[in-house]
Length: 526
View 1: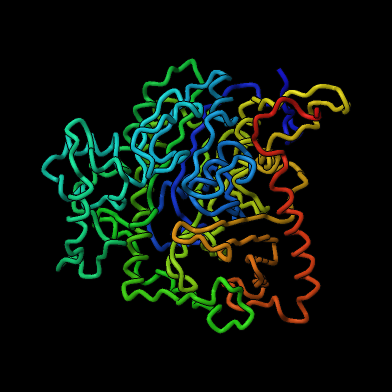
View 2 (view 1 turned 180 degrees about the vertical axis):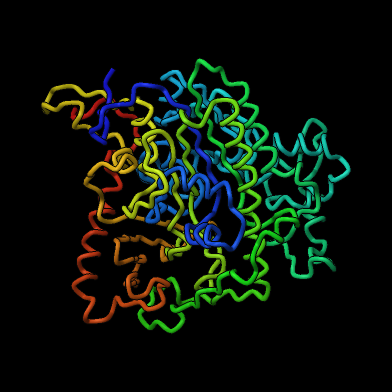
């Protein structure tokens, strides 16, 4: 069998170690860093940070759920694996690190939001095909296993639970369950009822407190399924668990008691929208108006409270690992797929708005031989997770076959990842590394306009973004960390702009290398 050598150049580890991938949804590095600095209570994430390495220059390659998650699984760019926007399926025949772990003797499990398939396509996706022995899935649509369980276990809260579902337009809600109930109509009726109450006057559909017990939440259910897997995994077999929470994805929703864990005085002010007065702003911004919500501070309070809520359940997972397996032989990854503007620059959510709160994400890795309580400033991306996990597990990814007809090449010369193993950085070894990160966006879910296509490169000093049909943004991050002044048109930045534009062109071309997944017979033959 043909295999790829380790990118790190370091000998593979000998012992099979347990691997846990903790994933959260729509968490910016900025908001986590504010939380760790005292906005909210995060003792367990702090514990992880002290146990390992935090990457403070991690950037999403395509800041929306499905593309990033497909990249994490495969180590490939959006164009290589084909998931360029939400709404695409990740081909189950694509090579994933989960399949390699599974084939290498690992017991593999997925719990929560996997999102390799569009959540509007139904509730019972066959995610086992991607390399999972066990799967208990609940995603943004909230239909399926969690909803079935919660309506059985908490029937007295049925209306409150149905009202919490933000995506009633999923076709399968029209004939839900064995009884073929039309839940779509009922959910839509419930969501038209007022959200504000005397106790919560600022509550809206987008930000509010739960009206059903914490024990019935997706977060508690996901954690319970993950802990059950950890407790039942054979002691003589290495284990991989992908534990993926839906929070703090919008709508921002949390049990009310967690609001008390947020220091309201430390909630950061919104970054003002500098693009409003930028005559050189890309066409993308021309028909935009800043979003100015009266309850923006309450929304941020609920968002930060969601982090404290998640932190509690991350602690439950860590305690289960310590109790059942021991953390000394466990590698723990913590990551978000993309950020959330949360009102900064007059925007919310993610996708084509390539500001810091959208594209910079938190990565934390801890485990044996990894430097502790360390911050790494190198530019890393989701493409790096797949080769890192396999490198640290002592396993390798298969490469397509080739026939020596026109080329004389060794297997080690054939790339199979877009990213690189982080192992050298994690172990403190001197490692050459990328000088720029790349980020791309296609149409957001509410648009079909190509002017919404954005391409970005980020270096230690600059963020440069080019929007289709003209218009550029260039920010000097050393002088202007909040990205308020677009200097793309200033004479003193023309040399830097041209250099970044050249880097961007190379990065755009590079997205198809390694070659995209196709029906490949072999490399190098007519």
